[in-house]
Length: 375
Image (tube, rainbow, N blue to C red; front, top):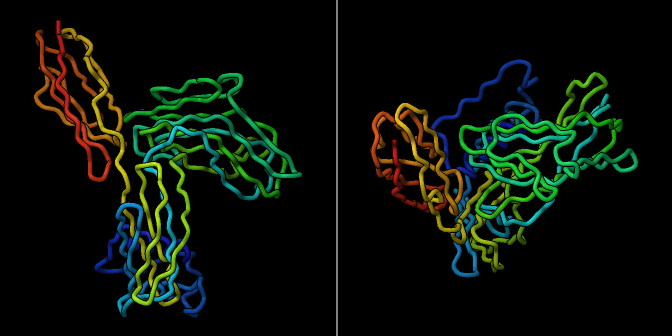
């Protein structure tokens, strides 16, 4: 029931969408009961929560001042708490710690550290993805600590998939995955018998400027037969910073001073709701991402009858990127992920005109005209 309510709140409050119809449907074995409606595990409790009074939150920024209003269908909400946070759209190039806390599952004898991009826990990431991993640590206090890094390069690690980059540079594993690629990383199974102990899983990672990372670091807990019991997952994306919360006035208004933030960031405001009021959220983008440019300045030559493949690259902007192109040389096609490929069928010197749009708000567009010589 709690997960269903969280999904409803995300859909309506964060996405600013309200359903025309709502169907409440369940399969066995959940929910186990429909009544009483005061029981958070009952289906009727969820239905009551859905039909709470709707709220609306407005947010704007002018210079170093932010302001907004919080209202309900019945009027302004007075003395309500509005939570604020700033989330960078791209990395800062500074190393940071990403953490996850839980309890070591019963039967644990080993742990495997690893990472995933465009597969398993990170199957829906936005490509291209780029980040650096420095080390992994599980700290279970008196029950023990487990650590792994790349001091010995990739000795003791396994990498699979077809990433553009998966190499150790100055003690960190540099990972870059472009559209059509995936990456998996696993350490060997490391002994760790601390079942039942509370732990914190920490990954040291760095997201370069103009990248939003978008990968997963994992710790897989295994039993004595190396079977997976469960796994801890941290998503390597630019980390948000919490700002001081504010209270609404008698008119439902609120305002705050905004300290300098590393641009670009998404400034978001949220109201948690209550037993009678629906939650609300709003966001604005502050600052602009680096200028989008086509980084590929020349195309490698091709030959008639020989397979040709070249990936075009960009700098700046915000991933993911969407490419488009004009008329291509005979036998070649240009895909939305920026790949020029095929088998040339005619010799000559051709002009290849392409454009790329990024995920900024508003989107940026960059164009380029490149020469391709086919022998």
